[in-house]
Length: 224
Image (cartoon, rainbow, N blue to C red; front, side, top):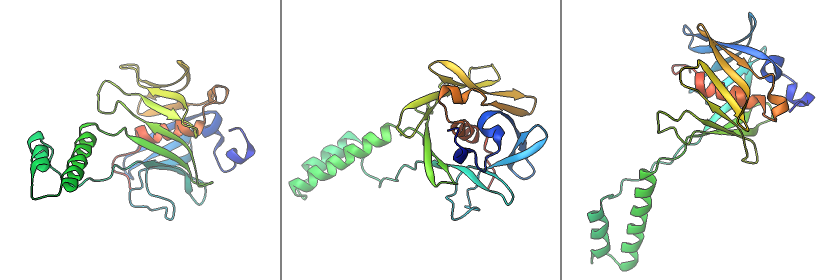
């Protein structure tokens, strides 16, 4: 994580310092600043403006600008419309116009459909390092359907949870907890957000994943 390879092409503040997020509503992006100097930009990029890189919320930097990381959302496949009521499932089982195997297959398919539609999938994003073309981590929000649960779980390549991003109500801060101890934070300062990743290295948390959480939390809804 502290290798020369990781640092190559990255503003140092994003990996081991402090930086500020400032919304630019005129162009629909978020500026990433070190002091008064622009070092990167967060953009939604729905239209795939950086092809052949995949579309999705991303951080771009450099001259000429190129993507550093992109969030790749897991998309739930659309299931065909199938009966979901108990009476409809019973009707499939007793319909003598259909072969027994067909009745069972359709009934099982309907039960699977009902289960998937009853239990919403966990919102999940893979974090792509565009320079290497590699997934470096994953973000999940298992409580996204509950307004009181703001936790985002930050996982490494092995699937191990390295930290949890939480937003204590009324604190004005977003905390990154590793073993229940804060190792990074995002603090609101007027109309800006201060991001501090100075302690992530000692905690074994990849600072790219903190930046990915900042993308997830602050990427402008209208940006393309």
